[in-house]
Amino acid sequence: MDISIRNLSVRFATDSGEVPAVNHVSLSFPDNKVTGIIGETGSGKSVLGLSILGLLQPNATVLGSIMYGNRELTSLKEKELCKVRGKEIAFVAQNPATSLNPSIRVGKQIEEVFRQSQKSKAKSHEEMLKLLEQMAFQNPRKTARLYPFELSGGMRQRILAAIAVAAHPQWIIADEPTKGLDAVIRNQVYQTFQMIQGQYQMGMIVITHDLLLARKFCHQIVVMYCGRVLEMNQAKELFEHPMHPYTQGLIASLPHLGMKAMNGFSPSFTDQPSGCVFHPRCPYATEQCRVEEPKTVPYKEGSVSCHRYY
Image (cartoon, rainbow, N blue to C red):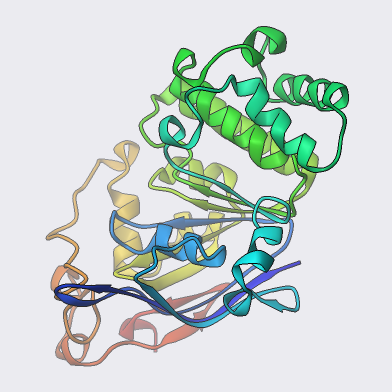
């Protein structure tokens, strides 16, 4: 089943007033495909992912629609959402060190998922070992007996991935799966997620700063900035022919393309520019960009929010 977001806005109530983290976002995530969400820190990527499963802080207000098949997720009660979380849509958090229970062996943490589906202790143990082997652990029995602190960052990330797929969900939302990992370990995590998607044929939403991962792994890419979607396209087309000036700046910052830094900084959510939010940093900004927010329009195979493409 597809996940469709329509006119989604997320606001956080703070002592300084409301903070707009996601602004009028409309997206479709096709089933059995991998969608990457890229953008700088503070662009609203993680908030968007967490809002799908209702995992935002209590001070968040969510407006708009999040449809999963024929179910409106924003209207489900907590008990109903719990039936969706993990079983139908799994979430892989960005920090394995805090997501895994430090006092329980990793094998037990995976077995718990199988036990919830009424499998026996012996069957759960057997399934856990098979899953660890699929996740490229050379000695599953030894790995199962280890505690999280005894594993490397990449190994912990693969344990989180194992917990996510144990219930055979239809979707996985992965938040920064390669954050803080070196190039070799990042490639191992990439191969793990590639195996998961290929073997289980599930839809995936990958929230990431890692543009190389996004290019290799994702079918389509969403570019976010200041809580807004500025561009969306098929991954190959977006990286070869970026349309929005912000996307062009992100790609130009890649090391193999010269690591050209963009001018300026992302604005605070509490002090966003008028008009196009990117205009203070845009080399093509006009007076229209300063006063009028651009509409999102279809362009080639995707869409773009920029006055240059009207």
